Length: 181
Ligand SMILES: [Zn+2]
Image 1 (cartoon, rainbow, N blue to C red):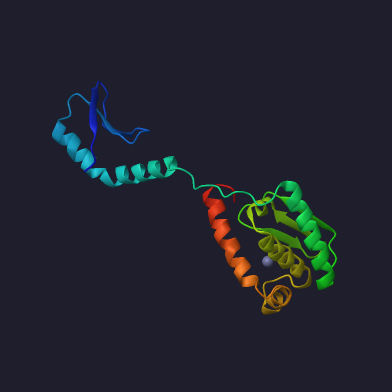
Image 2 (spheres, rainbow, N blue to C red):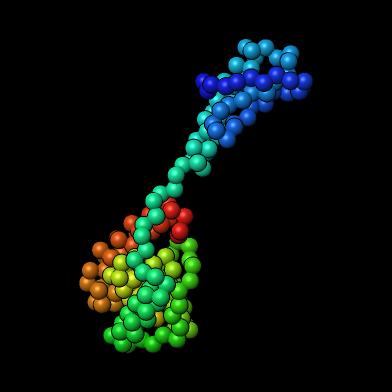
């Protein structure tokens, strides 16, 4: 049973209010007895608990933001350098590679036009992880899907790609908790 305060007035109905500081307030007509109010609050206890949980979630401190590894400029230079090197190794050519804000993914590739876009969230990733994303997107020019053949290309280029992928998954979780991804 939640704690609550009663405010009586000339109103006609009883209503429960969850205040921004988490207090529960019941506004009721003068004619309604304390016992009736208690029963009413009891019947709404699930709803109150849900609202209080939502409030707590909204006001919780955001997860600490990791420090960026790159500046926009150093990330751009790193990406260009890696893309140049790995497109040679994989024997593919790219018409465009750019950085943009993305939600929930690190990069995308349009194999038909050979355009690659990478997430600006890579500012927070290690160079090894940036390299993995570059290789991953370049490999999509050769293989559009995530078939075993695709992973063979990625694994051939970066034998430790699974570890880098894991790091990115952990980073993504952190960045999305901080509202960045
Ligand atoms: Zn992919």
